[in-house]
Image (cartoon, rainbow, N blue to C red; front, side, top):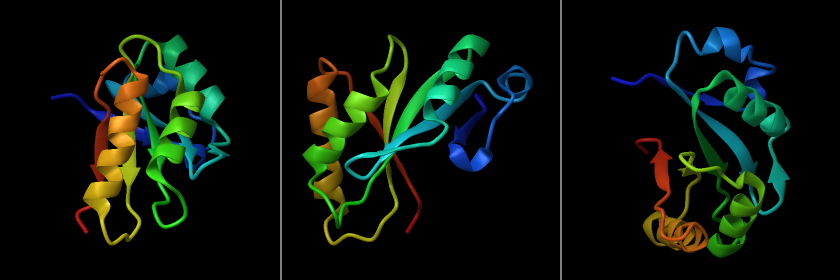
Length: 125
């Protein structure tokens, strides 16, 4: 079993050399909304890469505020993954059609990643 962690500005400055002894991968928040950038994204990305961790990036969505394609375009622009790094949609907000919104977002990301499929993670509600 692989152990992973969700990292964002809320964890402040993670010591990735110590962190890599506890986890196998990190999923780093890169972006949110249609123009938000996580305050620790660049540092977290660079330090996780330097530590040799498996990496994913996630985008926290705001479906009531934006079209999925706009948020997906922003996510792809910000995250710009390297080979082997995964992309994820973090969908937690209340929305009348979460499946439809998420599918449009995920399809848009896949179209920009030469067909590589992004993941989705969400809470149980």
